[in-house]
Length: 326
Image (cartoon, rainbow, N blue to C red; front, side, top):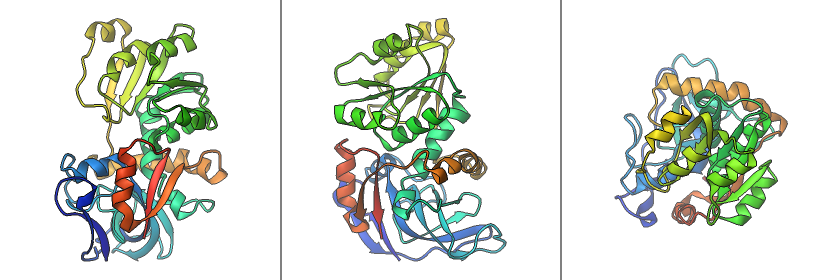
């Protein structure tokens, strides 16, 4: 099979199309003929040698999410049949024509979605759903501040928060992304390139602050996040685009009785990944099937243009997801 391989740590130029052996499904696994794969920032980090694949995943083939057709069944598989359309998250290796996954990790592709759209769903929507509801416990009537609201996870979180009846605030450093996010239900748009997002968040909530912060940026945003949170607010860190170090005001943390939590899907156990997939299937698949939420695809590129996809994502000029097709 063909795969996009990281030939050595470095820039986009180190990505190469190579022939590699096809994987074989073991007991409880299915093999998926991958037609479309989503591109994520984790892929960029792995390419640079800064985010190693977890045990069991290929070290030199990136890719965390896929959409395709069940091609073969391992012993004991009962949930799927050959020819079923599926999507899901893997620890790596999705930049290839075939991937094997546990049968309980795969999720059916809704009929209304193309495979190109489906490939933009798993990482964004499972991450957003898990972070907002399983981790942060967001409920109707609460206010949530979503950083990088024009990203894949950001656009998914925005739509899910809207459907849950939460009040939505979001940041971006691009005015055009905020304008597009407003069409998805963003109520308070904050241009982080010049506005004090913490002050705007407090003003928009009558001085109370937001109940939840979904931080996809990291770095120096921490200080503003603490200021933006209401008493007993919850902050979930998902991304570290702006850096992994920040100064923590412990006094503010204590006085407001805040909760801070980090989350990542890639390194979780199989059981935890299955739980996240089941929660997503229960709560989000019906919304995708009805069209109440939808994946946002910025551009569809052929797999052999993975280098260009990585360069585009690194510019921060994408809105939603980039996907690669075989």
